[in-house]
Amino acid sequence: MSDKPSCSESPLPPRPVHFLIRGLEAVTEITGRCTSWLAPLMVLATCAVVVLRYALGQGSVALQESVTYMHAALFLLGAGYALKHQHHVRVDIFYRRFSPVGRHWVDALGGLVFLLPLAVFTGWISKDFVLSAWRIREQSADAGGLAWVYLLKTLIPAFALSLLVQVLAETLRHLLALMGYRVTSPEDRL
Image (cartoon, rainbow, N blue to C red):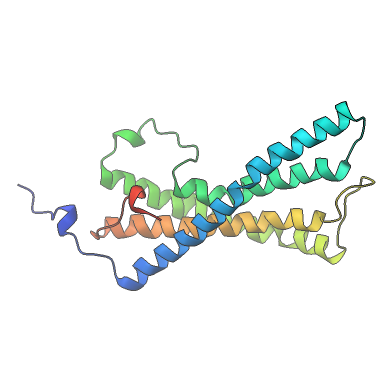
């Protein structure tokens, strides 16, 4: 018999940390669910572009650019949501054979060593790029295009923030598990 307590006997994490994780994941969940509505809107806009161009002989640069904006928002703002729900790309040649403790180590170190620095670096490196676009209220170079290129570029630091929020929640969850606290499984999340 092992002296290690079973999962149901493990202590709960401190309440402030538990609420912090739940709050961060709630932000990710809301962002992801709201952002997911861009997918059907993109389909409708793309169909409208095709019908306008080939059936009616009309073009709409603004409508075409709106598809690009929605596509960018869907992927950039949905990154944290994909991470939360384990829909990201994972090369699990070895990972699937690891014990739960081994998986917690891989996920905690992956968050601390790779994802956290990536999110911070992306936000930091995009700062001047985005501020410059806002300063001049950058618009589309195409006639009839959207006048909000600065908003499109703002999605880059928004991506960094969205990823950072979920990386913090994931890393805290795995660190708590490594310290022997009872943590919820992905199925128990919001």
